[in-house]
Length: 137
Image 1 (cartoon, rainbow, N blue to C red):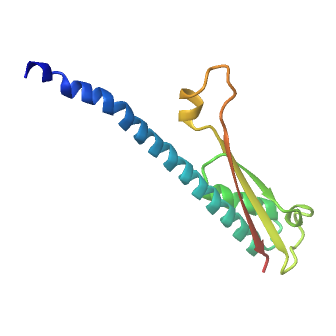
Image 2 (image 1 turned 45 degrees about the vertical axis):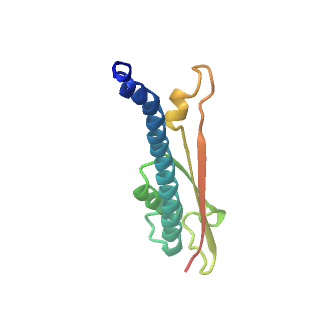
Image 3 (image 1 turned 45 degrees about the horizontal axis):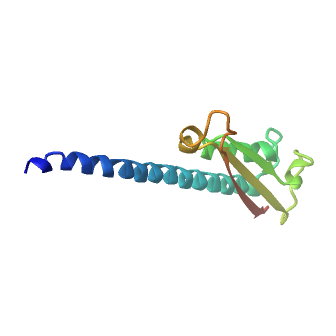
């Protein structure tokens, strides 16, 4: 019985790092999927805003798309709108014309950028791009 005294401590020391690693990977994976979902929804909302945009004299098509995307996502994103919406920002988009909205997000996961790299290494970044093409009605 005396030799079994530290058994639970050894088992905890062996299992705890594995358990912490699994939990950390679940958190990182959940964050990746959350970001993907937010970017997809933002692109969809931007495309919808461009689809129903009408010339009002106050907002360009590009401004409407940017406002719609920023309402959806708190993330730092780059927004690209197709040339038809950007060449003459005040012009009416012809009915039936396709409008493309592309939302790109680049980020550094905390786990990869702080724990798995040396200080002199370049940061590890991931980029995700969602693109939507809607027909203007």
